[in-house]
Length: 307
Image (cartoon, rainbow, N blue to C red; front, side, top):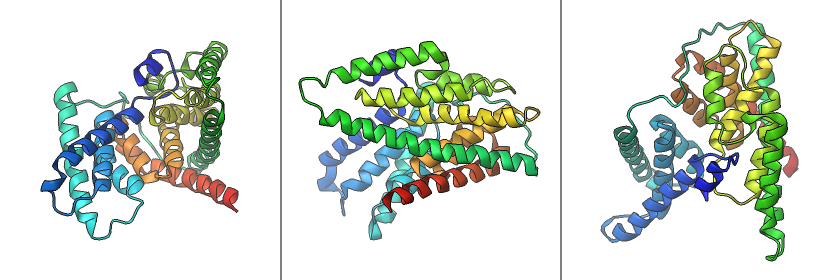
């Protein structure tokens, strides 16, 4: 399902299925050997497998560990935390080494070194981007949830209309708004990392927003991490419009981290992941600022809806 979705231009990525498949492999192995393991807890194996899948998918071992700790271990481990931590670290290391043996050592996005200098104006623009990312990520999450609920509520006789209609929507949006609104967003991000001018626009982000929801509504297997990064890069182009003299790649990278951090409600994971895939240590503080601000906006929306 994932291969067909990606081949057809569906606006989802590979990382979701990889994380799920990796977790499933860990579960399958754990079920076979659990009688030899003291204090066996299947949850720790699911977490470790998910972290390993993320590390292998993006070649980001540090983000894999933080993802496991920050996002996946929300249940209470108690005394089992030490065992979980050992499994997660071991799984991420083995997955990362295996991925590098098969594909070589690489940075996911070729990102030429950029120089960042703090100023009041840049700080204000970063916060504006973070605010947009926070609200957009919340609307994206709600849109995906509403469409999934709608799809699951329809009659068995017409369920097949969802992938057909979804495909037509994605094709129409990409025809009207351009090539950067479809697929996982890898090439759109790669292009934006090669130019000091914004090559992924807010129009691309709007089209990708629609296409992510439409592709998810189809029921196709796919991940949302890479499309979220591309959507964040598009929102980051607002920075280039407000401050055209500043390297647009700074705003694109911070937009990527902010949007993903808000969507996952895991700002540390998102910031470290983008740092690893771009290899831009100079942007560590702008990314942390943006992800924390966007996550706060997202959580405020979530809290407001609950109340």
